[in-house]
Length: 282
Ligand SMILES: [Mg+2]
Image (cartoon, rainbow, N blue to C red):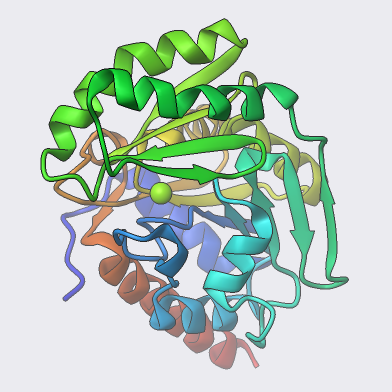
């Protein structure tokens, strides 16, 4: 069931603008927790099939569809089955918060060099876990970032709290940045975030209206960019994939949907309405 309260007038206007000028629209979507459900093993977080099918249909209408994720771009491509989906030929996947870029049209992949400090931090983690008496913490090496996952521990929140301060200190010792998420603490280079990634994409595509959907604190910089665009008069829509674990985005979103299932249903509704509008204009 896809349900949400009444939208603000600005959001309703933005949705009308998307429907009347779909080619001027950039739809940018986070991956984990927005297109795919959060699961214990991040390697198994496959995108919701209905969401991917809807994106394939939306690809025929909208100017650009992009995935902006903290994951390596090619991991998202695999977990989203983005290479196989028809309609997504113009898809752009920005991985590692924009440090990596993959284009469906050309299958071209490019990446900024990996900072050596990431491996140096990773080498220090086992000793830190031992010092804190933590076992079962999962380390996810992402190249330009490290995810420290506490989800599988009996006392996930306790471990998260115990790790927060020492990991922040460790990150700052190497000039890196700590980003807390849902049962995950991520260490990555400073100055790389989804807001920067979104700005570059807007410059590349020339899109004048934006829909952005996300679920976690790492999406906040992109939300801020979208809000600035609205202040400048651009039609914009902020969509939150809500969860019990994180509600920071819900308060500042135009649409609050019930997790990846709600996002899949809403994207399907949007595809339906654009198909209908397109049929009507032929
Ligand atoms: Mg997410």
